[in-house]
Length: 245
Length: 220
Image (cartoon, rainbow over all chains, first blue to last red; front, top):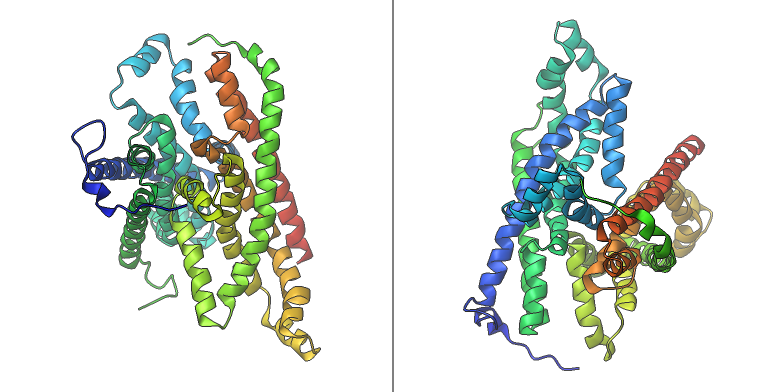
C-alpha cells in the first residue's frame, strides 16, 4: 500500500467548518492539560488523606483506606469512566440526577476529572502509605511524646517527610495522569485522543495526525517529569536521602 | 433514583461469556508473548553491545511514554500498511498488546536479572558454563522467580487494560456488555455487570498474588 504524505494537512481547514486541523489539536491539548491537572489536584488531596488513614494504628481507618484502594484499583479505568458518566447520575436523588443529566456545565469534563482524580488517588494513597511506613518509628513516637495529637503528628512531622520521600514514585504517577486522561475520549471529552480520532477520520492523514499527537503527549510527559524533578531537588530532606549533588 | 431492571443480566450471559473468552485470550497471548519478548528486550538492554542496548532502551521508553489508547490506534492504522492487507480489530489488538506489554515486562525482567547476586554469575562461569547457558540455566530462572508477583500484578493491569480495545471496536467483554446494553436499552445495568465481573476477577487475582508473595518471600 502506498501512503500519500501531506505535512501541510495541519494548516488545512476541516471539512465541516472554518477551523484548521491545528486548531483541533490545540483544543485537544488544552482539554488534556485541564483534565490532567484538575484530576491531579483532586488525586493528591484525596490520596494523601487516604494514604495517611492506611498508616494509622486504627484498624477501622485502615480497613476504610484499603477498601478505597481496592475499589479503584480493580476496575478498568474505561469502565470507571462509564460508571461515573452513565451509572452514578442514576443513583443521585431525582432532582440532582435531572440537573446532572440536563444542565450541568461541561458534564463530560467534570465527570472525567472526578473519575480520573479518584482513580489516581488510590494509587497515590498506596505510595503515601509506603512513604509513612518507611519513616523511622521514632519519628511518630517522638512526635506523640512531645504532646502532639495523632492528626498533628501527621500534619507536622510524618507527612512533610513522607511526601518528600515519595516524590519519585509520584513523578511517574503524574506522568500516568496525562497518559490516562486519554481514556476520557470514550465519554466525549474533546481531549487529544478524541481529536486524533476525529482528525484521522476527517482528513484521512492518519500517520501525520498520530505523529503530531504522540509528540504532544511526549512533551506533556517530559514536562511533568522535569517539573517533578525540580520540586524533588528543592524539597530534599537534609541528611535523609543519600543522593547529593 | 432511576429504575433498574437487572433481569437483562440473564439473557446477556452467553454474549458476556464470548466476550470474556476473547478478553482472556488477549490477556494470555499478550502475557506470554510479552514476557518472552520482554525478556529478550531486557537482555538487549543489559547487553554490552551499545547500539543494541540503546535501540531496546528507546523502544521501551517510547512505549512507556505514550498512552495505550494511542498505541492501539497507531497499530490499527499501520499494521495494514506493513502486511499489505487489512486485519481485524481482534488481530490488531493481540499484536498491539504483545508489543506494548513487552516494554513493561522488559523493565520487570531487567530489575529481576539485576536482583540476582553477582556471585551466581561468577559461580556459573567458574563451573564452565557459557554466557547463554549461564543466562538460561542460572540467572533467568531466579530472576523469574523473584519477579513472579510483580509479573502477575502487571498481568492484572494488562487484563484491565484490554478493555481499551473499545477504541477500535474489538469484541471483548466490555464491548459485549455495551452491545447487549444497547439492544435491550439497559446500558446502566450492563455497565454495572461488567464492572462487577472485572472487579471479581481482578480482586481475586490480586489476593492470590499477595498469598504467593508471602510464600516467595519465605523461601527466599
